[in-house]
Image (cartoon, rainbow, N blue to C red; front, side, top):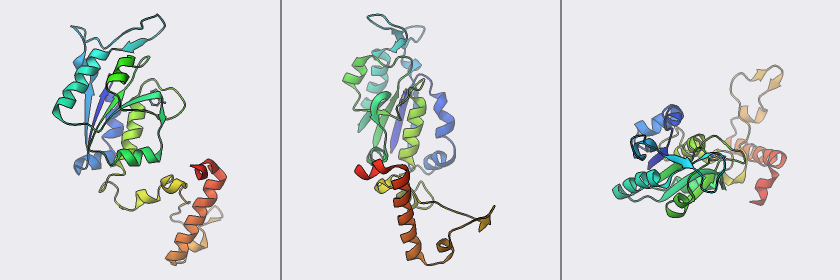
Length: 225
Ligand code: ADE
């Protein structure tokens, strides 16, 4: 998979996407992540990428031309399955969307900044708009990191234990069961007996029951999806 991220401040994303599991995924060539600085496509000597709003109002708007140049350049090099715009008024990200996007070959992620992008960027290029939650960030970069992390960890060969992503919370619309490691008892709280039993079918049954119980208690809305 190849992911191209377009941003006015790409450095924000470098540490989150170049460490730990994201680093391993790239080292193993499971994914290529490329950052593009919009300034490189800016207008004139000042490399301008934003301007004041037509109709008045506070805040700058990202201009269509630099974004067009960057996206068109990328699209002349390969076919993209999706051009995703990170924005608080997009569809709220969930596991189903991550699963779906993890099957794509090439995607572009565009990060908004300031007041957002000129509407014509959305009309002309964007195939999907994603929000990471009902709150406003100062730019789409942190949202892009969340999206990329959630997609890349699903790609085959990224997680050590191939099956572990299958047991994540939200796969099957259930929250994950509780997990324990050593010691067997800590401050009076014991690891549930069943986990020490070695009876793996029973353990699986218990985990499934706990998943259902947790979901009922914390996120009953997931049963209606
Ligand atoms: N940009 C600003 N706020 C955002 C959000 N909640 N999700 C995605 N991108 C954003």
